[in-house]
Length: 240
Image (cartoon, rainbow, N blue to C red; front, side, top):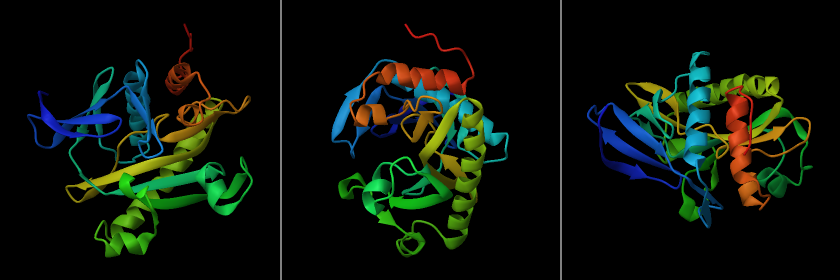
C-alpha cells in the first residue's frame, strides 16, 4: 500500500492517505503529551512500543468479534487502518478509582469499583475534554442513539476481554480510553490501545506501566512502555 500525503497529525500519531481511499497509514510518533498537550516530551522507540502493543491487542479483540479499524502492521511504528468518520467522543472505562475520578467524587484512590464506570468526554483539548452524556452526543449530532448503544456494548465487551487478558499477564487494567468511528454502516473501535490510552498496574508491585509515569514524573518511562509491550506480547523483557 503506497503512502501518500499527510491527512492528519495529532499529538501522538500521524495519518497518511494511501492509494486506496478506504485505508489510511497510521504512524505512531515518539512524542508524549499530558494535560491536554501542556506537558510535552519524547523518548526513543515510543512509537514502536505503542504500535506493536496496539497491533497485538487489536488483533486479539478481533478474535472476539470486536470490529476494529486495524488491518495490519506495516512497520515497527506504523499500521494500516480503515478510513473512518471519527466520532469526537472519548469513551473512558474505569475499573479502579484513580485520577480524575478521585478528584471529582472524593472516592478512595485505588478502590476497586463494584461495577465498571463508563464515562463520555467531548474530544476538545481547547475545552479540556468536557464530560458529556448521551443526550449531548445526540443533540450535537455526534452519533445516534443506536450508535451509542453499539459503542457502549463494544466498550463493555472490550473491558471484559482485556481485564482477563491483562490479569493472565500479571497486570491490572485500571482504566482506559477508547475512540470510535463509523464506515460502511458499521461502528469500529479505532485509535490505539497502549500505555498512552490505558492505566495498567503490575498486580504484585503496583508499578505503573503507562503514561502516569510521565504525568507524575515517576521516571523509567521508556523501560516501562517497553516492559508493557513485552508483557502484552507475552515475551521476556530484557531491559538494557
